[in-house]
Image (cartoon, rainbow, N blue to C red):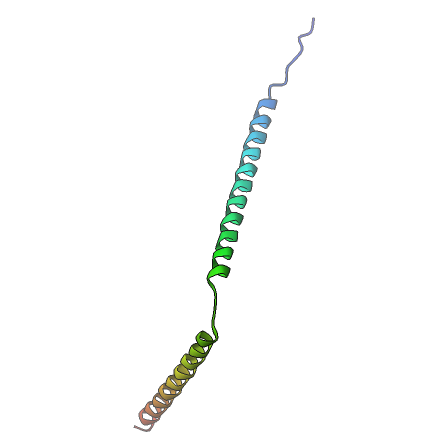
Length: 87
């Protein structure tokens, strides 16, 4: 009589399939947690972001002030570089 050989190699593939399933499950959980965190952050940002007209005007004034300072600094730098170039 012939003995029937059993194929014992299926155990390795089952283990690989289990590992891959676990990795996909973990990735899905990470995705869900990330989405929940992002949605909470968006809700918090939108609920706390009440900008008034005064805030906008103050920001415009600050921009104009900084632009003036930049212009003065550029003028000073230009005059210094002229003096160093002529010396």
